Image 1 (cartoon, rainbow, N blue to C red):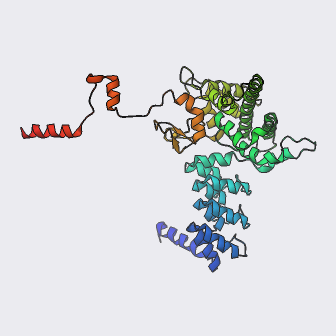
Image 2 (cartoon, rainbow, N blue to C red; image 1 turned 45 degrees about the vertical axis):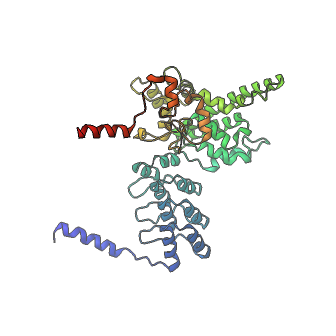
Image 3 (cartoon, helix red, strand yellow; image 1 turned 45 degrees about the horizontal axis):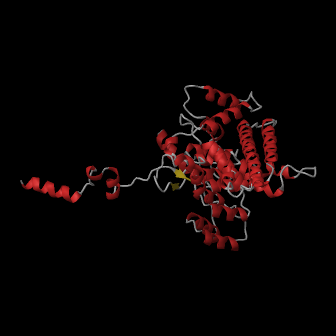
Length: 423
């Protein structure tokens, strides 16, 4: 027998040695509902299923792993509520549910799995983590989500201080946890997220202190020092402090206006989130965002751990005259990883969020997340925004009178062509 004939024979032998999995009717039905994304039907089946949901198919995949691979966040949540093992390692190639969620490209699925205790450092049979597998298939949002994940317990201890006055009240635990995990680090988005998560009701200096402590903790771990997250916490804390100074300044202006009796008149102009956004989004004479550029460079200079690798890399890129990237892009790449084909991704013109689904109703040229982002950016965009409108008879009379060019009449052109052909 030749060598080429031996390989198929060996493969067939391995398949024969593989134990055959026999599923009950209910177990098979669960797999079928997941494969068809029938969440309501799956809920009914699970409601009557009294056994463990960690059974596997012939490839060693659990229902949770199937749901994660389908990218079905509702099915994933149902199975987690049913007690599914989020770190099951029975798959033939050691893929976990988080590996499959990362391959699906679903950020929501990955967040649910991570919150349920999924191990982001688990590797498959070729030594790849879920984040690395997501990067391999260009699911960059998932990569950033996994790499920026922070366990709740890392934040929760700020609400449990032996002193009578903990740094963080319990009511802001969930909001602050989401805030530290945000992927989009654009200054406007940072301000909007503080507003979205209800953190403006808290003393921002306390939140800044919590971020500083988290930075110190990441750099002083005995094992697995995470320089990237330490730098991110420093960055968030720095801009949180900038927003706090902006708020204090405008609240002082508001108090002054109230005393002078002009508070109601100036109420709109005293929206400090809007005014902070104007400071951030105002273009300089060379078309660059001068505030962001200068502030990020100052933020980097104040990073206390100057011997770490990420600090040296960022400083080198900021100082390089051959690197055309702006400071914000350099920081984004340092925190979330390098990404190719950036020119194919659309961004919100206000907060930098990826793939916004709204456009300026006039020019259709710029994109926004929502009306709030459009409102914040309008002070700059209105200078260049123009609705493309065909010239009307009235407009022609205003601009050129009798000498103005007439609109093109397709019927008249067709008639003239027919005459030329006939002649």
